[in-house]
Length: 629
Ligand code: C2E
Ligand code: CA
Image (cartoon, rainbow, N blue to C red; front, side, top):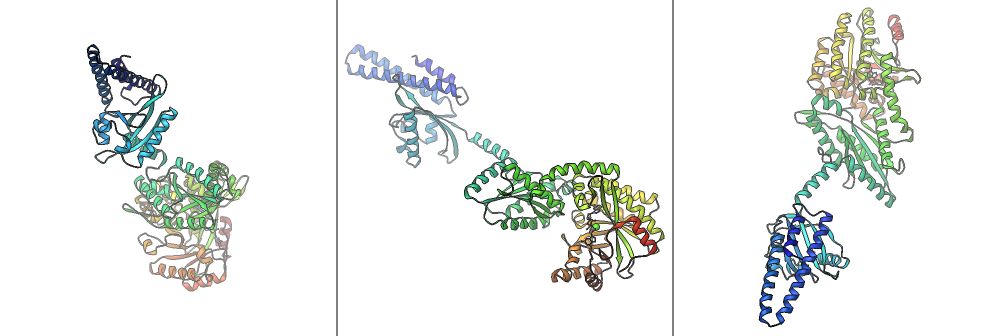
């Protein structure tokens, strides 16, 4: 075998890249041949040296020179690939050859390395492992590739993809082992980055959908082994879309980051918090012993997310709806478990948000039903399948009906009357609320105009407006409402718009402009469901608010719950001082009525006086004055 040719072949094989499989095999074969040749020539040399003959002396000198030059050639070859480490070892683990890169990495010279073992050079715990590994390579004759982290003499850490393979003599017996290594630190870092990109959400740093599923699979296996349950919480931020649309993506992003950290802070180290998409987060509570714990965690998350978020210049408020499903009780498959949690989450939204809900098999049809509902809702708008009920609101002092709240109902062609709690949340999510709200306003204004005409003290109809209607599309509608009132000569004063605190708390410029437009048109504003949210009276004075409607949950616990009773009284006293008029909602009995009267409440609304009734019914009552306590 011609050595020069061999080295050239080697060089060609090495190329610039690390050797692919088939090229590596050829490389090994060539190296084996090379060593075999060198060995044979060394043998010849040694034999020749024993014969003391001048003629042979000359031949031997030539032969030695040749071997040396071949060795030099191999050395220059192994050094010519600057990126790669190269070494060869004998059967007993002594270095027989190495290139400059290898020597550099070891912080030694080639001379210091050759003839020594790893034990002599490294003197660390790694030695035993390496020796065992190399023994295996030699015993099995199989190559081994593995990543090894090494420390360069300058202290920097490098990852080396190290390939070890035996080389064989012509008789097929291994002669030793060669190692070739490539520095893949950069690639490793890129891989790590890609791994992160593939498995983690870049915004919040939480595991993403992909790794959530992997983790869930893993946790299910663990739960099986420990014979324990596993709980999945699916968390959705209720007002995220509005905030993102009104305050911009930057604030939306900040909100998600902060929400992620609040959710994480409510869980244990062993739990997994992941971001599935948009404003949807999940928590895997692993190996749960007591199922009561899950409700504590869910409640804690709801409370934490309900606290104000200070994001750049804005303070925003959100609430969360959480769906809970349990493995293996609710579902045994990953997808199914997530779907169950999703169904439960929609149930929580349907029940009014800012709460958690458990999966129950009855919910299983929900998503399909949702789709049907959306289709039906669109048809309902086109075919005008809505009607309004009006619930009278009594003036505490005069005992007369002074206002009425317009409450929408849906006359579904096959399902009968559907109540707002069963379709308003869906209408809000899909944006259809804008069109529905448009119809509600025009219909309510029509009656408000009429009642106002013949009632001497004036009359007001209250219209519920969702936060969603304060966004771009809704805003355009509201300008038309004001036009509509003008063209039909309906005084703005006979309309009250009911908004929730959330609208004010998250109000951007557009929302403020809209409120100003209402005020300029004489339309008054009421804060609905007061007491369930942030409930800051001082905050409300910044806006032009006429009425405060105290949530029925307070009225319900009047006299039953000391704290709620005190709170109710405090709200009334403070509201008075701030010049706000108070409407108590959900008044069902005389006791509540008396207490409210004593606290100085201005208006009451509830089943005690009347359930919501048709416009024609209210019209008759207003004309003939047939209603009282
Ligand atoms: P809300 O604004 O809190 O409306 C009051 C709800 O309390 C009404 O339910 C009413 O029927 C009920 N209610 C009145 N008095 C009593 C009482 O004494 N006891 C009890 N337990 N309940 C009483 P309804 O009609 O089912 O409306 C539910 C919600 O749907 C409303 O809550 C409102 O937020 C929303 N909604 C209704 N109509 C519209 C609408 O046209 N647009 C929008 N955006 N939302 C609407
Ligand atoms: Ca209301």
